Image 1 (cartoon, rainbow, N blue to C red):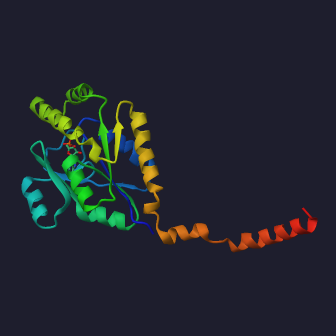
Image 2: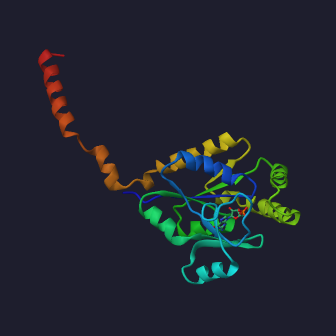
Length: 222
Ligand code: 5GP
């Protein structure tokens, strides 16, 4: 059985990662979303243990120093981290996993697991991103400023990602991400030799029928 593939979706806050991801996840039974730990405050509408595990700084640091995270980073004053065991269990069971992490965490994952697939979701331009952050109204103005600065910085690293998807039209962005998942699942490097053996094996029952068919063709002289 093949190991699961680790996908990492990264992109500025406000770019629409959550929305794109929820569409893709709803259509894909073999994709597991890794819920991160964060020390930031829970926003209205967010569900603890579905969107994030909301933790205190003490709890986060304690986890970091004991179990450790697969990757972690500080982002605009808060800690974010990917719990290690759930991801490893899913990959070992052959399920694909997708993380929603910022750039520094994404690169930590790539160092650790070079076969991970890094995707950066970008806005059509920074003004559209600013518009989304202001309209969303979930962050204070100074936080929005810092998030925009960070977005500009992150986008400069786009060549270090395997794929870039522009989120202008939502349906297109969803389609693009699904295409990346599909293509990566078809890569020869991901195929398990034992799984592939079926394609060069023969179907005994069908072979018997084909022998009979071949015989009839021969007898009919065609
Ligand atoms: P937000 O506060 O808007 O939910 O997320 C801020 C940023 O943190 C986003 O870019 C998001 O992708 C990133 N993020 C969420 N979870 C993790 C995580 O576990 N690790 C890292 N490194 N970044 C994360």
